[in-house]
Image 1 (cartoon, helix red, strand yellow):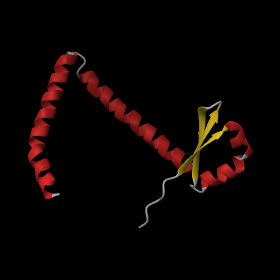
Image 2 (cartoon, helix red, strand yellow; image 1 turned 180 degrees about the vertical axis):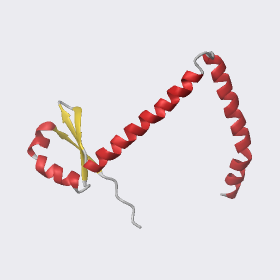
Image 3 (cartoon, rainbow, N blue to C red; image 1 turned 180 degrees about the horizontal axis):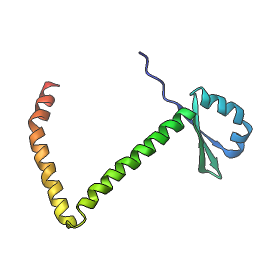
Image 4 (cartoon, rainbow, N blue to C red; image 1 turned 90 degrees about the vertical axis):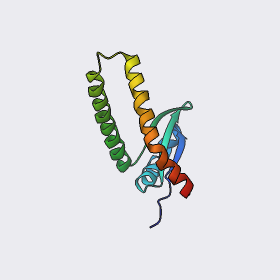
Length: 111
């Protein structure tokens, strides 16, 4: 199966985008381009396909859910001093890395 080529992102002045709007919409629809619109050299908008917008919306929703989980976890440790949390996290990371080291070394030797 052939990999999809990356979609080219064009950067255009707002005045150019306005003049070529119909062509840009067709290119975006066909998955040939994304457009970053600038005004006075400042990025102000993007023109993306409906599929890209759906993907972006999904990722934003997922991100909000992920942060909500982190907020819940944080609430459980509200009364624990930050320094103690940092010590425990460092200790846990050290333990996991120690446990994973033999596996990583085997993989490194095999390659």
